[in-house]
Image 1 (tube, rainbow, N blue to C red):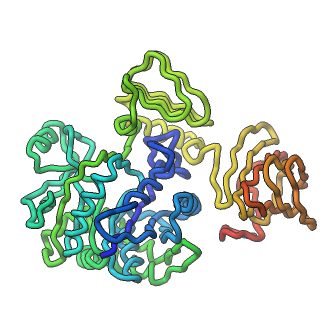
Image 2: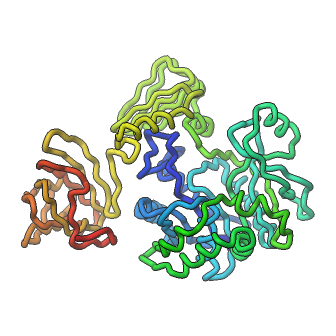
Image 3: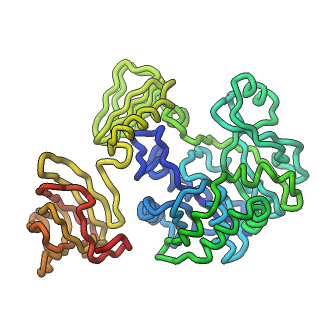
Length: 482
């Protein structure tokens, strides 16, 4: 049978602030290598030896992330992904139900359900476990993957396993989902050898999941079915019937189905496959340090970093050189607009900083200085009273909306590539080192007709410079127009 990756990409990951923001969460960041966590997840079955794999992952996400996700998938060679856009968040069970409903339109694949924000450092071991899970799923089982614990962790839920299955190869009967334990209980779990950490990774045939959700959560199944029946297709994006999906209850895969399987054994057996593959949910900065490559003193670095007399320290440098001197068990995270310093034992408390910033109305929790758009990105490199300077990069063949502003004028200076400019009634080309002035109230548009990225410097001036001072008349990407 064909295996199809289902990637759940919705969370914001506030404990990885300031690298992770609401508009650019941790799954979109390259935290452990050159590729983002989403990209690593999409490539997790590359060259899989255990069966046929559908090359088109199915991603369930929201409107805000859609263009970034599509671009990141394009960068790694994924063609024609299916990107389901949830109008509201309803947890993982409705998300999987949507994916299964879309998948059965083309057959009945085995779905490999993965969060987009996990780290797996040992791909061969991961694929071996998936091959075992696929055999059980092909026979109608609902499979989850239990992380083999290497210490008594109190921050994870656990899976209690039973007897080994006849198929062998490590698969065991799934007996129970257990909530996060206290320290003594966690130690007993690990010592018993029968308990695993709950990874949140699942496998089952699409039809098997749909039968289970219709049995255990009929209201959810009905809402999702209506939402998909009334969907529209926009390039790679699948837009749901919003009103129908809003009627769906919110629940997790665990609670909605997996914990109830014993009530209806005719729906399929619950199976747990042990997984020991360098897994982490990267829930906080200390977890990222644990799975990162380290030097001889236990230091891990990303970006341009210098360590001097440091031990067991993580430094994440996003935009400049960071020199750490005499640091031990510390985490330092630098971005262009914020720096976070914490003791490694206190990284869970970063969420308290995020809560304070939100309470103060600060935008630092929402977006980075560098903001991605469907046509490329911009970086707000300087600002002051009545002016702002942006560096803008437009992808080859892309164009901004035809728009105007009520409160600001703009100067555009081309520093790389060729710009096609609409400025009022005129349309013309600008080459490198050429510029144009767009008066307040003029209709204008910027396009890149070339084969290389277009880079310009934009200088805004006026009484109000907010991003909401945009009146769109035409837009290639379906955003709101005048």
